[in-house]
Image (tube, rainbow, N blue to C red):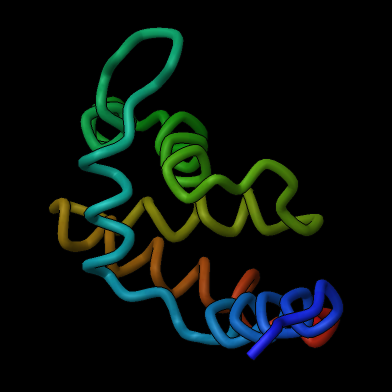
Length: 114
């Protein structure tokens, strides 16, 4: 069976849409935070996020989460929302759960996908 470029594009687009609609899980976020590192410093994103929480620098923590999830253009107000949510975080699991809930709300249920 020969697959045309048009058919291949359709299959890829449908796979991307399916993936984009799945909710983020805390395990997914924790894995991204643990495995990903800052290109500039080489420090894992999770370390940066936890250090930011410990020092009360929630903007740094939010940026680390967004970098780990490859989010570079959040909707207006979403970054501040993430910072505010992180105020209550105490553990790595808290950070992962907050990141998953926030990421799903803003990036996995968007009506403009497709």
